[in-house]
Image 1 (tube, rainbow, N blue to C red):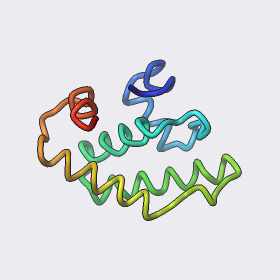
Image 2 (image 1 turned 120 degrees about the vertical axis):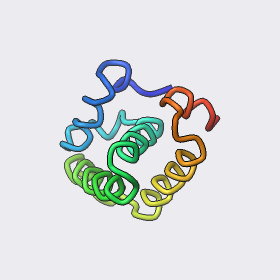
Image 3 (image 1 turned 60 degrees about the vertical axis):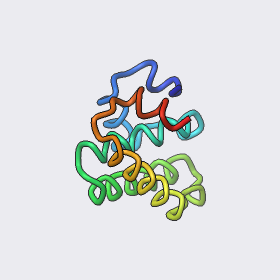
Image 4 (image 1 turned 90 degrees about the vertical axis):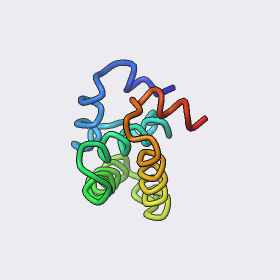
Length: 102
């Protein structure tokens, strides 16, 4: 369900690389975005997760030469929808959470 990133590194490494801004934006899938925000919500709660996700996403889009691709509305919508669905079933592991969204 996830891209090359999730298939070739641990979940922790994926989140760390995202937060460090060393992700190739051209191959980072929608599912990867959802996984990272889901992981950050579990680790830090919604407000800190949004801060970390937004900061990292801005760095990644600037580094890729496309800062215009960052969209605050989409970022906040993704974060709050993920948080809402996570709250409904907080004990689901990622694979089960992702499958339930299909």
